[in-house]
Image 1: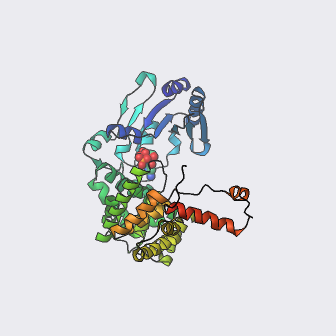
Image 2: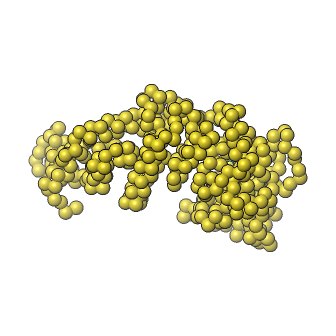
Length: 394
Ligand code: CTP
């Protein structure tokens, strides 16, 4: 029906990018991007109306997001000829607007499009030999100035290479080395560079991508002292294991995977250096708190645990209940001894969710005068419950 709506407006409509790529790679992808040859915003409004969907428009960019009642989203962009400002030394050849839109994208594998207009519905469009590169498992840029235009693509190249088990093509690899040598990354704002790093750390297995970053001498953008040493690789492997354990047991619990890996990356740095890194990357305060404060409390706690192994449940609870999930997972991965990992996982699986159901009004009903004693009573009840001295039938 998107094709019909476009037809009525006299526009060409295509599904493009990651969604089509992932069809060929037989991977699921729920992000649908539609390119409209015409007015994308007008199309989005019409399409949303037909489906009773909401629409957010960004007039300046000619883009829109259509949000369906069940939360499913479609991104719409306008392929406008005047929109493209090409670097001076690229030849401008005549191209249709969909072809130009695809030409300004990062890698050939992202340039596939499928037409949606009814009379050509389902036609696959492959101007830049994307199918060949998918077959050859190659990450290739479309033109030599791709990384000059947008240095974040270097990180994307590594991310896609590792995610799909592809190889960065020879010419593309040479251009990456060149842009690192020429310091293109200095032009990138801390926030944009960090955003790319975060996405790498969000991947299923970020370890090989971090090694690749080292191959291209890119880890220095975080700090010159970060190297993929045996120790770092072991730490990353430990994180991967702990996160897999967590995700299996607590399917619905949301947390920030990347922060656990990032804590390992900067594990060697003291507070001051960690602070400098957070500043450089213009990190939001909530992340600074994790990386520059809570991480050190977690390290102290780990140290303390190594001397205090036979703890009562209530004592363990007191020690660990202040930590966020991310910090607990970091501690489990960072703990060298299996016995300490076990203690933390015991807290995580058995104790964390225990609370008392006694409320102030219950104590009032028992005729106890309100005051600090309330806290003491509640704590004592919680302790007794944690230590198995009372059972409740909640
Ligand atoms: N794109 C680009 N240059 C960038 C970022 C994005 O050319 N620096 C293009 C890519 O061709 C991509 C499209 O914009 O197909 C959408 O970007 P994004 O959603 O980040 O790409 P996906 O391929 O969907 O990546 P992911 O699977 O990680 O979401």
